[in-house]
Structures are given as structure tokens and as C-alpha cells.
Length: 115
Image 1 (cartoon, rainbow, N blue to C red):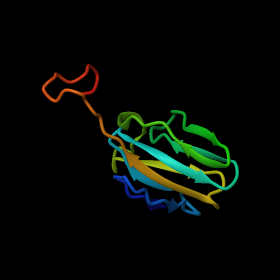
Image 2 (spheres, rainbow, N blue to C red; image 1 turned 120 degrees about the vertical axis):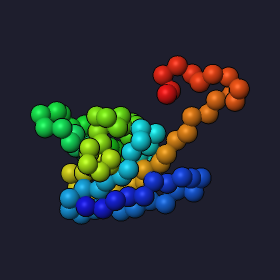
Image 3 (cartoon, rainbow, N blue to C red; image 1 turned 180 degrees about the horizontal axis):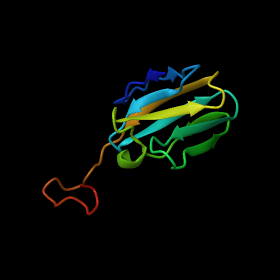
């Protein structure tokens, strides 16, 4: 298992997916994954809570993105990290990217639901 660093941008450095045990990334809810695969793959985000479903996403060959992951639902409570696995990690490159919230008027109150 490998901890993949968060990419702040604007240049993105991809990491090869781990061959065993999956990969993890720190998650505060603003991250999503950029994923490049050489051929179709299935990505699984493991839900750390017993009895809850994992998230799976079919990835066609080429560049793909994941949704953002709600920390209270997807983070391992002991590490604050999300576990991602691929059915076949060979030829998979990924980069967790942090997004920011941009507000037009810095003196305006925050938009509802952002905090």
C-alpha cells in the first residue's frame, strides 16, 4: 500500500498504482482523483465502515476523474485516508488533486453549505 501525495497543481505528477494492497490519499473532501489507464479498469474505493458498500467506478482507457469523497463516509477514522484499489493496477497512473472554493466577492458571506 502506498500513500499518494496530494497534487496542488498547476503541474500534476502522476504516481503508478500499487501492485498490491491498493493506494491511499489524505482526504478533506476537496480532493478528487485524476486517473490515466492504458485499458479499461475498475476502481474500487473501500468503505472503512463494516457493512457499508464500497464505491466502484468503471474506467475506460484514457483519462478519467473520480468524484470527491465525503470524509465522514470514506476516510479511515484512524488515518484520515481513503483506500483506492484497481482490479488490475498495471498501467494505472493516478494523482489526487485538491480543489479550492472560489468566491467572487471576498467580502460576501460564504455560500450556504460550504462550511
